[in-house]
Each structure stands twice: as structure tokens, then as C-alpha cells.
Image (cartoon, rainbow, N blue to C red; front, side):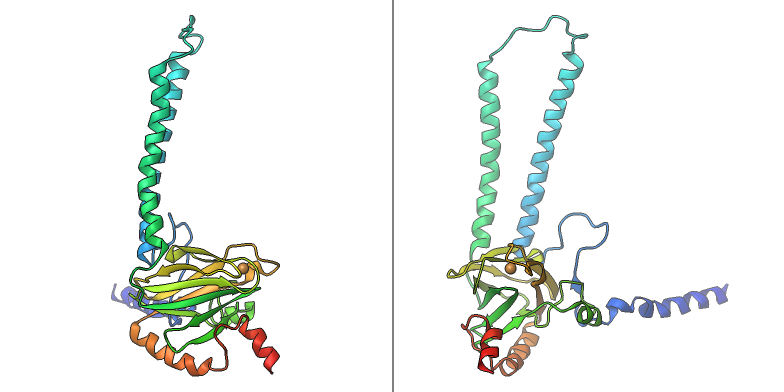
Length: 284
Ligand SMILES: [Cu+2]
């Protein structure tokens, strides 16, 4: 018997090697899993509330479906030609008509209240501790950090070879990630340098349009560290599908160290200049 246990222990010892594909990553990417149910795990309070609202609507919808289905079954069983050979000639019923108008209105009003509460909650950051600016380009994103040394950098999708090397999911890995500190309310200003884009990060519950000549505001407050992905979800041209968003949430200390390093790393980039890559190419 003991020998069997030794064999098992050897397998257990090899397990990290067998699972090494993701085990070697500095940060585990937060991704949808096979056979998972529901939406992706919430990484911000906004996404938590979106989940709650979704669940509330699901109960209401389910109740309506059951009620309508019950009415249909009653009609099918009790009022078919065989069971009810001489049907009633009733064409109007004032009480019933008021009820089937008023009850759906009341249901919609009941849904509107939490819906508006959620809309205003995700609208803007009341106590933002820092601001980042997101600029959409054909076809990449650039990020500016006005409160942390006023640096900026571009974020391009990794090609398939680089993504495989860095063990990043295909079409989601980027060269320079947006880095934000955990448990910090971050105001996010979103605009575009060319056409309409949209900054969508599902685990944060953030989806906001990037318009040229206009700045939209949203916010995020990551409640856990990790690597989160999003994509442009506004058809913006031929490479629309190839401008992913990767957000790395790190501890406040790590963020401070990263921001310090980034100031020198991206010192040549000019914040506020649309298309820093283009500006650099012209300058060279
Ligand atoms: Cu886009």
C-alpha cells in the first residue's frame, strides 16, 4: 500500500510541471472558463451591482414567463373545442383591460428605479483618487497618467508568436498594459483621436464610447489584483478586432514603483499629442 502512496506523491509532485502552462505567469489572467455559468467574475463594485441587477431582472422575467405559460396551458386544456364546445361571446372586459395595462406599467416602473440608481452609480467617480486618460486610435489604445508624472504610452496587441511566448490569450495580450492600483477609485476619461471606438472591460462593468473631440467619463475601483481583458466594441475599421485592452491591477506599492519606472521609460512620449506612435515616427 505504501508503494502506491509513493507513486501518487510522485504524480502530485509533477502536477505543477504538468500545469506549468499558466503557473509561470506573474499575474493570472482573469478569463471566461469552459462550462462556466453567468457573467465573468466581478472585479469592481460597479460590476457587482450589474450582476445584482441582472439577477433581479432574471427573477422578474422568469415569473412573467411562468405566469404567461400557465395562462396558455389553462386556455389549451379548458377552452379547446372539445372541452368547451360553446364558447363565450365576450369581446371586452374593462377590469381586465385596465389590469393588463396597469400591471406591466407597474413592473416597468419597479425595474426603472434600480436601473436608474445603477446608471447614476456608474456615471462618475465621487471621490476619485487619480485620473487616467484613455485615447482610442485606429487601431490601438494610448493611456495617459496626468496624476502620476504625466506620462503616456501606446498599447498594441501582441502578435500570435509574442502572445504564445508570453502565455497570453490570443488577440487579448498587449505590449504595454494599463496598470492601476487596487482599492483605488480611478477616474477614467475616454476620448478618441480618429473615429469612434469603445472601451469595454467586462470584469470592471465598464463600457464607454470614445468619440473624437469629446471626453467621456467613467470610473473603476478594482477590488482585487490580477490581469483583466477587454476589447474595443465599436466597429472602428479594418483592425477593430485587434485593439484589445489589458488592465493589470497591482498593489498600491507596486503601482507607485511602476509609475516611477514608467516616467523614465515613456519620457519621450508627449501626453496630449494624439497618436504618440505617429508623433514619434514623425520626430525621428
Ligand atoms: Cu476601436
